[in-house]
Image 1 (tube, rainbow, N blue to C red):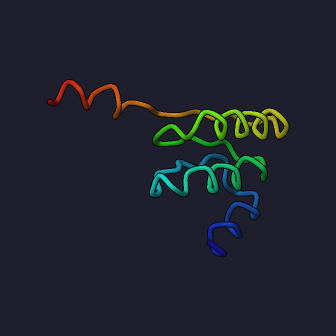
Image 2: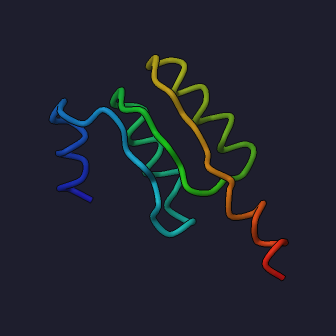
Image 3: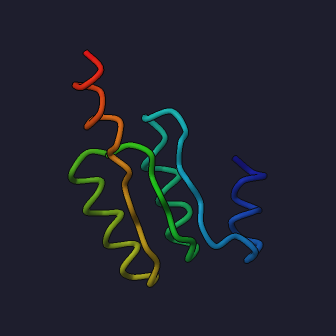
Length: 78
C-alpha cells in the first residue's frame, strides 16, 4: 500500500479504478478521495460506507462513481 499511497500523493493521478478484493474497496476509495483523486469503483460497498465516501468526495470536490454492471448482468447469465 505504501507505493500506491505515494502515487496518490504525487499529484499526477487524476482518477483511480478500485477493482481490488471487495473487502478493501472502502479503504482504497477513501484513500484516493481524501487526496482529491476521482474514484470509479468496481462494485458497491455497504450503503453506510457509500454515504461516507460520498461525503469525502463532496468535501474534496471530486467524483465518486460505482459500476454496478456485474450485478445487473449476472442474472441474465443464469
